[in-house]
Length: 184
Image 1 (cartoon, rainbow, N blue to C red):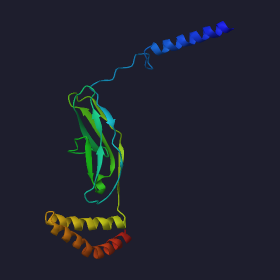
Image 2 (image 1 turned 45 degrees about the vertical axis):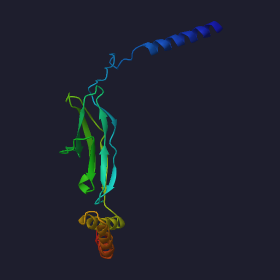
Image 3 (image 1 turned 180 degrees about the vertical axis):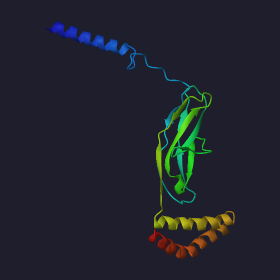
């Protein structure tokens, strides 16, 4: 009985070794194709998210990283809601904080030397969120502050005018913003 267990274990090890040594075959019985070195590979997919509409000095950035394994250069075409975005040809896309920037985004990465080789990124959703009352009030204060600041080209006087303007305008703008939001 002991001999047969040993023989069985040796046969099992032999079958396992042969199985690991054999090349893998696809479902049709053919060996799998080698990956094409000209085909671009996306190493970092774009990430979706949300932003507040009307934010000053704020952008939502979509970014992708890709390369061709053979070293060929790649280039990018961004799409929003299935439509190609004119001029969006880099590995990143900055979305302005406006409602029209929301939607579904993806990028097509092509091999510059072999245009027939391309890959499509995952489609991500970017939501444009309407600001709350306090966010809108803060935006207005930022506009007043930065408007005064930029008016006098970044001087201490501009800083004083910006802060003073914000303090003068806030008691007027905040109630108006509250009333407008009340009837939305």
